[in-house]
Image: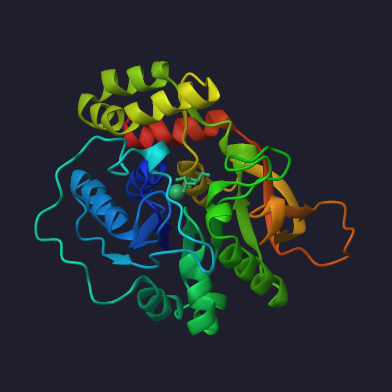
Length: 311
Ligand code: RIB
Ligand code: CA
């Protein structure tokens, strides 16, 4: 089993990603760290607890991290995830869930030093940037770093060229990518180029509900708002579930394919938050990122449905 910290901003698709991770025997979720993103940090904490409670896994510790991006003003994505951050499912809060005094970065600093813990980052990279500031050795001890974020040839979702996680906190994303470059390490960027291929359609949801009314019904409850959002804004019949693909790639490295390239994150101007992928080697710099461009959708859905729904 691979020990993993899931750093996330739940968030509807973050929640589906947590569910997939908890149902995967290859992964031991040693902790969930919350970052302000889709939802404000405290809301993300409460939402993570709701998902853990539904999955019967309140044993997994949850820690709160950054309340805002490194430099920019905080801009949430509740317009996409609903006012409760969980598709306006308004699930009841889990009782007696005190916020631990230990912060997300303190937890990361403690547990990453062993060198056998990986990080799957599903939100803005603010916590990881703070970890670089406070404990670079711990950051460099991350066994494998997979980030849902960025985009290469695919258009942005917050601007023509920027994806939300890196647009919300471009300074943290830039520090993470630059630090990896300076230390000859790599991040695996699961960006919009591949996540846009993963669309939960009404047909798939129907099959999930048929096969497993409890879990399928729960997923319908938290994705209904997301379906409406996608139809209104992108005329997509269904919803793009970005984050579970990052977990799936962590589990089965054959699901995605791509290229290695030196990559930087723009921190200002009209392209703020853009992941600038030097795929042609203009800068003649060693790669600090694996940029995924192809996805085996069938492999993903087989994994997702078998593990979450037992389909
Ligand atoms: O741009 C999509 C990403 O931003 C997903 O991780 C979503 O949950 C939000 O965090
Ligand atoms: Ca997310």
